[in-house]
Image 1 (cartoon, rainbow, N blue to C red):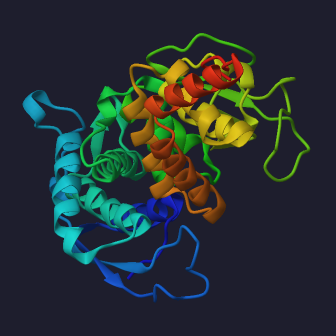
Image 2 (image 1 turned 180 degrees about the horizontal axis):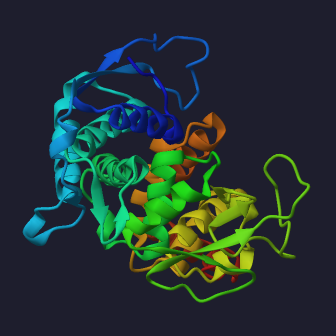
Length: 346
């Protein structure tokens, strides 16, 4: 029985089992914590333990398996299929997002241990890499489920896809650079240092560097005068997603990605409530407003901070009441009564 959300803990456990000659033959989530537990409430914590069964492996006959093979014959494809099948099996259990992720680690590691050792070109494939593949499948499934299939991760720009996947896995907490690097490889998106303004690359995501010596989460810029241009912030060997209030307002005002637009929408709501947020949405996302609102729904569903969750719900409620048609009517009435009407951004 194993209850841990850390990939490093799963890496250590799996390596110990495999290197001792064992193969994981099944993984089953078992409820072990009450949903009303004091240390569980409001936390990204596991409420289930994973029951693993193992059998001795015939190590003498071990032949390296390939990570990617022709026609979906590689271990990578088997890992992804096992996770997808696991997600279907777990549906009746109504697992929370953390338990679902951890349970899928077990499915991915089961496949890896069955084919151990596994190589990708000349490099051995680690348990961590298999877990990151599981993570990307689970995150994509969560996003599709929350938006009722309206968003497919593969349809998003590179930065949004990476940021949203990281948010689905780690939420707003810090995570290891190595974990991000492995995840980026599985998504085919590079991590690029991006100080100051930069042009977004469809195959990469920008990373700003936080100043040393600061504790806690910044409420403004640490390196740049106006805030972080990139959605990711690195401090030492750790990464995290920048909050909306930490982003450079100039970048959010002239957004390059859908992730910029979501955070820009949040910032504008804070500045002037629903009318200002609606004006921003009309200006910055005229042809993709529904997608931005779908992404906001993902944010509201996945964020654990109650204040941020309530704020997202207020934005959604306010935008439903402040429709473009209603704004036009307000401007028209104001013009008739005063001879003046604010601009679209006013």
